Image (cartoon, rainbow, N blue to C red; front, side):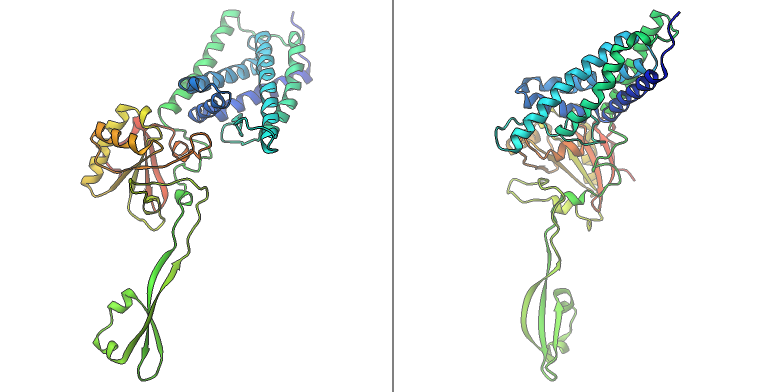
Length: 391
């Protein structure tokens, strides 16, 4: 007969299992985002050639974390789960130790490693520095060791051995299917600044708005009169008979607004920035924006669906534009390949430091966002792009 699990050990086991489930869930709601973090790790450790495996590695890591959490929480193959926890936590303990040291050396100008600044342990839900992440792992490795060294005091659930392996398979299937759904569509929860209903005009610097002001003086009374250009056009001949022109000046009607984060532009071939036009809070026209953060990796079927929508928008007189981080030369070749008739603007970025705002705005390559007055009305992954403008 198996020994009864001590209450204190049960509490530690449940809390540790819940921690892994929470951590896996915060990443599973945006596996593409965690894949981006994995790729950043590859680049940081000079393993950039693993870029094609970034998303796969993210899905595997999230799945392993979820399955281990379920196994410990429901006492399924506890001995195996305890070993899994020990390996998992030991690896990340030393990894985050190195990241914390490397970041300290970078901050103090001793050596530059290109270290990843946010480990992505809890996705975008909780952002943590490398130092905080390491300290977190110092705390969490303690209950991991407690469970490991007391694993024989925890009995497996009443399922048979084959039944327990079936349970592990079910846990794996749940984790993988959930992530595949989010990957195929878009994250439906999270704290992204680009979610539906968000005001994204804050990412675009708005230039100051000026108006021309004319100064006239009444020839009889000497009274000075200030008129805008529109007001001046409304005056009749009698006004000009009684008032004489003095001067004109440019008056700032609305002060310039600085972007929340610098780096979001929509540049044409002449270097003109069109982002303020489409993302302005004063633009009450619907604007469909196609995000293709990497033209070379854009899904061909998704592009064909986007082109169908673009043609429908142009027929209805609705703005449809594209934006990408790819170069102007790549844009020209891409436009020729697909016969694109709408403008695709260039958002220049540092390939190492970003900011990767086009990629952050849309977790699909390509994907479409509907804007009105700078607010996200809707957004679609390429599989869900509508064939015509929504009502």
